[in-house]
Image: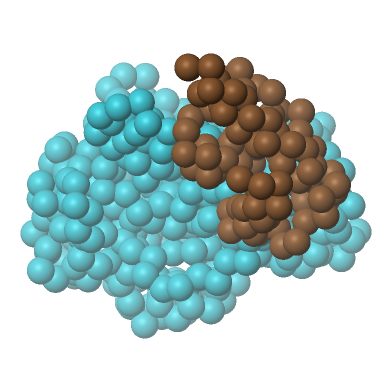
Amino acid sequence: MTRQEIEKEIKNIFQREFEVENPGMDDNLREAYGFDSIDAIELLLEIEKLLGFELTQEEKKQAMDIRTINQICDYVEKIIRIKATSAGEK
Amino acid sequence: MERRVVITAASAITPIGHGKDQIINSLLQGISGIKPLREDALISRFIHSKVYGTVDYPINYDFKRQYRKTMAPCAYYACQVAKEVLEESGLTSEFITSGKLGVAFGSIHGSPITQRDIYRTFFGATDNKDYKTIGAVDYLKSMVHTTAVNITKMFGITGRVISSGTACTTSSQSIGYGYESVKFGMQEAMLCGGADEYDTITVAVFDNLLACSTAFNSDPQRTPRPFDKLRDGLVVAEGAGAVMLEEYEFARKRGANILAEVIGFACNNNGGDLILPNLNGITNTLKLGLENAKINSAEVDLVSAHATATKMGDIIEAQAISNVFGDHPYVVGLKGYMGHTMAACGSIETILSLYMMQEGFIAPTLNLEEIDERCAMIKHVQKIIQHPVKTAAIQNFAFGGVNTILLIKKIS
């Protein structure tokens, strides 16, 4: 999945699940949209659906400091990279 | 320090209407809110009672997602009546968020619909992935104080929170403890009430205790029948009620529309059986209420009886009313119109008593056609009476042996 595709999917999730239209890539989600810890948990479930595999507890905890759409995309890219590396090693 | 406490706004969602105009119309027209029990694909087919006090009209909610995400149906009801009461009160947003306003609101056990979904997932799960469908917010939707804190969140209320969960006395306690909070200077105002959602589990509970009406399944509007010879049990119902209580001087100085004064409240326990109605316990509650209000029984014009239409409950309540009030006040059993709205009944029945006080009429007990001779010692209402109501007593009793009485008075 390219960075552009990830951005598109994340924005779709925000529109569909959180009723947030066209969020700025560097908007502070909490300050701008009231995005809270409950939303973060819901977002992780959506990311799992997007990726097609479960995130570990450790991976989920790493997401708790995320504040912007750009950071979410960074996070998803990183998870995909780790998964690919891990699959390659096997 | 004892301060006077007044009601400055009220709203209810009931099986007989939403808001004052619809509700008064139903009372005047003798319209029942009892409908056939809905099929729930789970337990409804095992329940003998096939009737339910149903809110079957649309309600136009406009809650944003950030609030909706933690709200079950009972919280929708609660937040809607809270919103209407806040608007009607005219209190400023500055006051609402100042810490001077608290919330006393409850439901009998959170959201049974949410709890049912959790259990369905939990016991139906076949692998780890199934558990993930239990939402991150399910606890927030189903906890016992979900109505109160969804209200505080939506409106930014920062005062005290009281969330009674005492079954059928939940919202009479909300108003009572809200009244005490203002009376004794702990808050300037309290938003008080209760809400419960459509729930067949509650019907099953009362059905198993043989306390539900079953004889009118094919003719739902003829039940429940408080104090009537043919009564055969209660009818479970849904709904919500909310009132704004304020300190009298504060309300007067800001030019609030004062609807009535709360002049007394009492709550006690039977100190024994958790289910059976108790004549001594209830009689004492009514006496304590009058003492608290500093009035004598002759000053009460109207008694809103708990009157669920169970065989023994109505008889014991009639005896208690007779013991304390004699045959002076008119007695109405409002559940005849809408069934037993559970956590909401105390607040809804207070609001309906307030409406009758404002409009100068007393509605009859719906379905009271032939008075049970064992309940005949009090002054029943069988047709609409144009009669000024100066002081009303609202009585509610709950499983667990909890009894309450609220006394409200017209402001002259």
